[in-house]
Length: 272
Image 1 (spheres, rainbow, N blue to C red):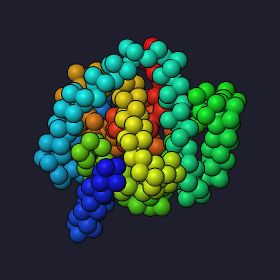
Image 2 (image 1 turned 135 degrees about the horizontal axis):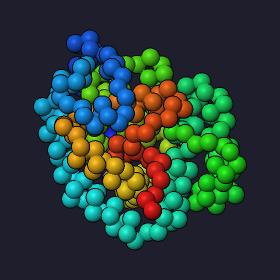
Image 3 (image 1 turned 90 degrees about the horizontal axis):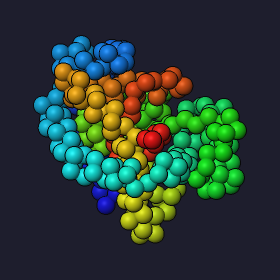
Image 4 (image 1 turned 30 degrees about the vertical axis):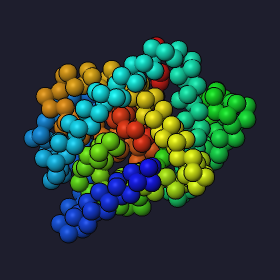
């Protein structure tokens, strides 16, 4: 089933890239600051590069329905049932499992120092950190970071293309649709082993836990943004673009919450 989702998302992304190539609209959106401008974002913002906005809004609403019906109740149960130390342990384990994907992308981007940090983190946390349950590397002053193949493509000079909202996966663009939702899966040895040994239920379990963990860490912030935004769809679009720019630039801190996406294993701080 995970393979089917990858194929579907890759078709969406490939179709979008063909459209981008045909129309020549690979362009980067204008910079905006957070949080005031993003909270007040609207469909009239400049350079939105969203030619599929009508379709995107429909998919966005379907994703919102999915979150309201499934993801939000699951995250509320997760926060209510799991004490903060246990949620932090889950987040640490998910981070550690994602390390091989980060390492491959560090190397593909020519980031030797960051690749060494990633390697150190994996060794330290997998051993002294008891399979990643405790982030001993952070305690030792070895910082964590995230990388994905969408970022790698950006470093290689591939433009983001136009804005897309993918079913379930959420905010994206042609570059990230292929990089994050298709290629990164082949860099993940655990996912590959689970799929090749007919244990796809393990892949789904990991994805589901990661989605609930991520959403539980940002649900309150997103609810506030939804409450104060003139146009929540446009605000999320701006947030996604600004966050991806910060991700690509490596190390630039941002106050923006991550956009909930069940395919992300993003690091979040558990709610108290």
